[in-house]
Length: 470
Image (spheres, rainbow, N blue to C red):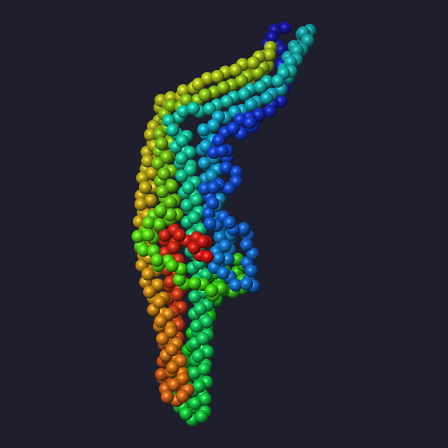
């Protein structure tokens, strides 16, 4: 019977083991080679100490600090920003992994049975284990892996800066909404006080008319003033309800929740002590938008180096071990052990100009990032200049409005006493009453403008965080 007439069956049971048995080896690697599994020191920030979710207590006053914490916990953009940091941290670990060797082991159990149908020759059967192992390690690539690693690190910095910018944006929105509601509440309280004064004036006019000391026209004028103030009070209450709805939405809590605002908010914080040069310097050094643009530019420049290295030679070390045969082959007739070591030098000769165009693309992207950085710096610093001017102006208005309110209160009390004594007329009293209402409105407006200007200055300089709001 010829060998071609034999019937051969091979039964294989294989187990592929990746990085098997090299735990002690990995333990000796530097810490930076380990994949990121836990908090990264580079991503610690002012919002990392919030224990989310937070319970919204409607029974106690809502402080600004509690409002900020609620918004940071419930805002989807903040969660996305944190997720992007984890993505970039994983990408950095992936880039670092290219510096280390890859090791794989394949263990197979083969059963090789050969039969001879129609021939008196007995079948033969062989069972043995085969082991195939390989180690690959890139030794040199003209800095391509290092550039990719630096680019990944820069993108991680950009993600952290973008997270900070998102937090600042969220803080700005919730603080504006909080102060907006607080200002609307103050305006409503002022109008309620104006209404109380108008009712007192009407009572005095009615009493004087009853006693024959005043004319009916005085009572009618006082009644008109009261109705006007009541209308303004209703409008102020409606504006307050609207501001509270906006605040509830910015907090991310259930719509329609009751809110008690904390009125104990200081309007002076020492922000005015810095000059414009200091604000510009701080913005240049720490504004998240500028930092993110700088990191993006550095990553783009590193990508140019990485793209160039793709068209240059590489040097790889390889080691292979074979026991009882080779992959995808049958068993050998005798037990064998083969070890192969080698160094491979790969020199790219022609790739259809692919590397050339990739380098051009990376260089163009770097130029785009450079222009974006310049635009970000200009717009950010211009915002600081404008915000500083607004803050200085609103601070001066704040002081003047306080003096105006004190003068209007004194004038009204004097006219009220004179009217009760019959020395002054209703026109004078209503005039000072209207002046007091205007002074209260101006004071409330100036406080709101100062809060807004201070917030805008902190945000434009990149200093808006939970610490500056406490």
